[in-house]
Amino acid sequence: MATAEAAGVGGGAAAVAAATLLTAVLLAAVFRYQRRRRGAAVRVVPAPVVPDREGSAAVDGLTDVIIVGAGVAGSALAYTLGKDGRRVHVIERDLTEPDRIVGELLQPGGYLKLIELGLQDCVDEIDAQRILGYALFKDGKDTRLPYPLEKFDKDVAGRSFHNGRFIQRMREKCATLPNIQLEQGTVTTLLEENGTVKGVQYKNKSGEELKAYAPLTIVCDGCFSNLRRALCSPTVDVPSCFVGLVLENCKLPHPNHGHVVLANPSPILFYPISSTEVRCLVDVPGQKVPSIASGEMAKYLKTMVAPQIPPEIYDSFVAAIEKGSIRTMPNKSMPAAPHPTPGALLMGDAFNMRHPLTGGGMTVALSDIVVLRNLLKPLRNLHDASSLCKYLESFYTLRKPVASTINTLAGALYKVFSASASPDKARDEMRQACFDYLSLGGVCSDGPISLLSGLNPRPMTLVAHFFAVAIFGVGRLMLPLPSPKRMWIGARLISGACGIIFPIIKAEGVRQMFFPATVPAYYRAPPEAEF
Ligand SMILES: Cc1cc2nc3c(=O)[nH]c(=O)nc-3n(C[C@H](O)[C@H](O)[C@H](O)COP(=O)(O)OP(=O)(O)OC[C@H]3O[C@@H](n4cnc5c(N)ncnc54)[C@H](O)[C@@H]3O)c2cc1C
Image (tube, rainbow, N blue to C red; front, side, top):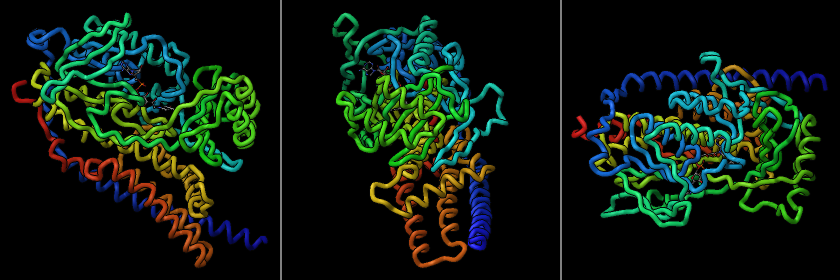
């Protein structure tokens, strides 16, 4: 027994050493490649020109940009464009404070984007909580994965909050700019003439049907978008739903951390959303959840989920079920597949979605806004719809490093963290390998967590860590001695890992993701007439 244990410990140490060595080699290759690529890819970015309001849209009308939806993306975008001097007309279905279970944890990478947009004060005065990393739980063990924040200002961290309070702060900030018109109304159609979007038709608060025109319409109507169909080819997948509860006066085992429980059949999340409330999101695979009204949901949560909850939060979890305010949301994923259309653009969840397990949606949306803001900045006016459309094609490539890293990680982690429907030893090994790999700390936790948090969004680093986990898993199976059965499980583990990550990368676009500098649109300069 003692010998077997010693062999196990020795074997474990050898596996760790082998995997660490392999990881180091992979990462060194990645960094060398990235250094070479950064040196090679010289993008010609013209010097910014201060927008000339007099010579701009005043000639055509009163608005430069119409924004549909003032959620996370719409209100951040409106403020950004308004601050740059554009006259913005925002049409939002409901201007009262939203009450939802989405968009409650902003990754530190997203907070950095808020700073770039001048919106960081929107997480002040809403009882937002600082988030310093994640804690991962599996089979009674837990490991802490701090965000690598040492190189940043001390203010930089994740933030978690009530989504509605955050949105309302951004809307209030929009309202401080005289060139932003924020109107309550529901957009029903995009107005199109000869393939160019000219504006929108909408119903205002009093039910009147109105039309609004602008050289550019940006659709940010969220995950249930009715307007995206004309502007992209939506392939929406709904792998699961989140069931949301609020735990009151509950002390998390790791304060100021997001908690991920690798439960069966799929993960459970906890994170604070105020100084007294903790959000719990239980993932339920498939598109149908047990009925809340019939009590099936409460029964499911008490019998299937509660026994897997860390003991420190068990009582608050059961109390929250008994209190009864249970909400659900579908977890959608949709790769970006735009049809570049003169006069219009999609942003936010209307454009691109990923599984919310890693809380990446707002970071991608804010990062996209920074990219778009920088592209639009040199333009005095937005009149020439077809030249503008061609120029803005670069947006789809420039956004890729951040968006594709966060999207791919979310999809891959969701699959790895979910137990397979049919018991599969290789899948269990991958899940365990992932937990143990992250628990090693150092580069093995800093690397993946900086990808997830948006602090270092590099697709090659993601692929390197993903395969390092798979190789780590296989390495452990081969020790102390490989047997045919273990070799077979190892082969299935590698093939399973490829089966998880390659389809996601294919949907993101291999060229745009790994070789953006080879995409011609990447170098597109602003329309000539602008200079
Ligand atoms: C369960 C769940 C949890 C999530 N958790 C996180 C998280 O912790 N962190 C994170 O970063 N991301 C998270 N996300 C993703 C995040 O919520 C989205 O990425 C983000 O809200 C996208 O912002 P948006 O502006 O595109 O959409 P929204 O914020 O949904 O805004 C859309 C707006 O458009 C308005 N609208 C819709 N139709 C019309 C119309 N026809 N006319 C006028 N207005 C209209 C709506 O009223 C709404 O205000 C989560 C998603 C889900 C499903």
